[in-house]
Length: 361
Ligand code: ACO
Image 1 (tube, rainbow, N blue to C red):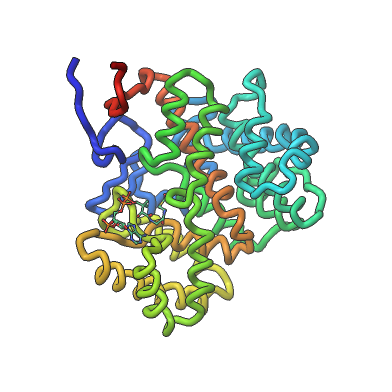
Image 2: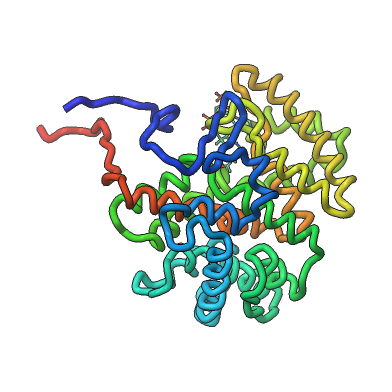
C-alpha cells in the first residue's frame, strides 16, 4: 500500500473537495459558495449565509425565509432546555457551558438537527451570560433574526439597529472558512456517521483553543496591557523577547491580510462612539506588523479575523469571556454545511501513524 508522509500540522495537504468555501491564502481572499466575503457578509446576514451554505444539502437550504423560521422555532424549542442547562453549567465559562448544552441534545430529537444546534447555541449563550449576572433567562422572540434576538436575550431589550446589524455581519463573516481545525474536526466525526449534534459538539471543542477561536479575548488583554499607542513598541519587544505570540496575528493559510479583518474593521466603524478605540487598535496593529517583520522576518504574519473581532464584540458589550462562544454561534452554520457534505459523499477519515515506540523482543 502506498504510504505518504505529510507534515504533522497537515500544512498544504488537500483532503477533500468542497463547494462550501475557498480560502486563498496567497491572494488574501475568501469565497463562500461563489461570493467574496466582502460582498456577502453585510448584504446577506447570518440567515442569508446559512441558507446559501445549506443550499442543496439540508431542509431550508437556499431559502432564507425558511431558514429564518426554522432557526426561530429551534430557539423556542431550545429554551425548554435552559432550566436543565443552568445548574449543570454553573461555574463554567460560556464556551464550556455551550459544550454542556450541546451534550444535552438528544439524537432522537425530531426537529432537523442543523436548525436545532444553530438555534440552541444563541439561546444557551444568552441564558448563560444572564445567569452569570444572576439574571433570569429571557425567552426567545421568534419574530426576530438570530442576531437581533441574541442581543435582546443578552441585554434584556432590543439593541440599536446599528448594533444588531453589526452582530449579524459578524455571524455571517465567520460562518465558514474552509478546512479550519474545528470544521475538519466536525468532518472527521461526521465521517464515522456519529450524527450532526456529536459532530458540532466536537467542532466546538476544537474551536475553544487559543490558537483557533480563543484568540479575541486575549487581543483585548493585550490592549489593556499596552494602554496607550506610544507604549506599543516597548510592549511588543518584551512580548517577542519572552516568546509570547501576538493574538490576532498569523494564520496557517493566509500569507496576506485576512479579508475578514477588514469586513469587521469597517463594521466597527459603523458603530457609535468607537472612533477612539478603533484609532488605538489601528495604531497597535501598525506597530505589531512592524514588530512581526522585525522579529519574524521569514514568516509572512498578518492580521487575522480575531483582531477586529475583539474590537467589534467589545463595542457590542459582549463580555470577553464569551467571545469564543459567540464565534461558535456563527461558525455552527458552516460546521453543519460541512457535516452534510461529508455525510453525502465522504468516506471514513482514518489516517495512519508511524509507530516509533519499542517493539516486543
Ligand atoms: N505571534 C508571534 N509569532 C508567531 C505568531 C504570532 N501570532 N504566529 C506564528 N508565529 C511564529 C511562530 O512563533 C513560529 O516562529 P518560529 O518559526 O521562529 O518558531 C512561526 O511563526 C510559525 O508558527 P507555527 O505555529 O508553526 O505556524 P502555524 O501556521 O501553525 O500558526 C496560528 C497559525 C496558530 C494561527 C499562529 O499564527 C498563532 O498562534 N496566532 C496567534 C493566535 C491567533 O490569532 N489565532 C487565531 C487564528 S484565526 C482563527 O483560527 C479563527
